Length: 359
Image (cartoon, rainbow, N blue to C red; front, side, top):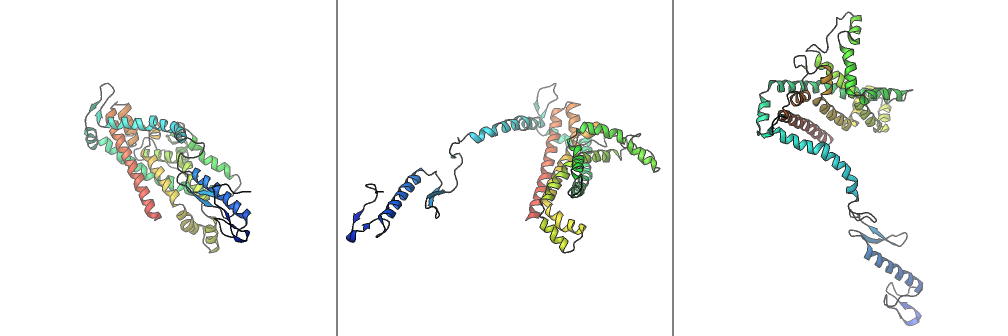
């Protein structure tokens, strides 16, 4: 193998040895291989992508590129290819969320009742909300809804997840059974719930067996809201159970085994090992539960229509009534904007507390 002219000079020295740029006294074959390797590395360095450097692999002796490949510079990929895959989702987001949100914000600062053109009124709708007793009642009912909803959807699903996480026979059947309400229509579930809780329903029949008189759960101002809360919690309990189940399966088994070796009982393992490991999962469940309770509408609409005596009028039902019964779109949009702000604040506070706890 010869050395190309002009690449590296070579001149004979005394004793017939060759002077070369690699080192004096090396055999000619080694010099040829080194020269060819440096030739290849020189060409590869000229072709390397921007942002990378060429280093020699100590095992193979070849030049290897190191460094991050710049975005959009992948071989065979055009810069706009990722955006083409994102385009359908972006269009759907713009049509289903962004554009309606912009319209709702515009209407919140306007007077619009379908029969008349949009008339800007500034903050008049929000000022009126502060003096509306029905809106205040809806706010109180929604906060009470959240307070009753959280224990049912944060604590009970954890217990169910611990139950279905056991290695028992037919455990898959119970997992599916608990999850069925989640995939069932809320309207269908609420209609069935009305027959269960009415005066001649199953619940009153069972209460009669122990000598308790019939209770009008849906017509009693003290029982109507708790009944709706129980329906909403039962409907979504399977979803929160599956979230907890995923978190339980991510808890290291070594921690639980170590607690067993130390003699910790089941309750102690739950409090000191499992629950601390599930704190991020609890934060997610807490956020979803609060948001679900604040926007409750379908269960209220089917069961009570806001009654009796506005005992179950939530913010979601209040917004629907103003928009589609009184056709006051501007006022309803203002109330919706307030609800949106409350949900963002609740989620933000929960996220902030979770991050501080993790630190």
